[in-house]
Image (cartoon, rainbow, N blue to C red):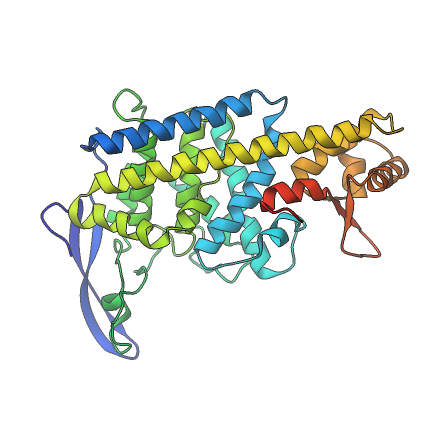
Length: 397
């Protein structure tokens, strides 16, 4: 599979399988990323330019909003559902969007841990803090905390060899490592050194040498190829895409969902990544990646515009009613940003009494702006059906 164009070293590995006995194989340790852009074709540069234009349009739309941060949570929930599905943890989108912040179901907790992890990372970038190995380890711990993925090694660079996928038509009796689609770097000092090299590469300003879209493609490839953690590499790697655009100010607000596009093209995604490792085919990977970023940015922008239109429409409904309280408009903002909420949360977020919050919620229910979620006798939750409809891309919620 690997020819002279490969972008790293094949390093011998061996161990003993408790069932099948001793085995020996090879793992792939990628070289440090080059300091300049890989050579790309004209068509790939056009894809990169299109992606930059789509990102600029998304950012321009966000900057025109009074408070673009209101849309961060809906975007994160959407991304959390899709990025988790890519890793095999599927929960219906409607269920994820309307879930409480502290879900008791293990699978839902795993999905929403992504939201917490991303918010932590965005805060670090907003504080202009460079990513470090301990910070990445903290993100990984947040992602798996309280789930079946949490292990003694969680929050640390993996101490064991891992394998990715399985090649077709391989006998079941074959050693898992030899049946794997890809075998990333073995644990140890080389893996840790390559990860530090990658974070140093990210921290260095390369805007005069490498287009931000190309740089993001390179970083995503390197992180996924290193596969530094036992679990969560895919989700963290896709978060790094948005983090880089946010860090380089390509995006002023990290409202970008990338996983739905890649989820729909999982096989090609894996093939393009492997093509870089095995043959040094950066061109095909960057073209694929740029197309994904461009289409993802355009889709996110359309969703953003639709959410803002719904927000304006709901506020117009209030203006046409007998309701005159300014807090009613603020409650619409809350319904867009939180998706679901309790009366207690309205009380806290709007700074009003519980009785007034309860009356306000009931008034918006009567206007058809809000609807009760489920039929809980206590701790009732509410949502705006029109907001959910936009996020589900359907005619009916």
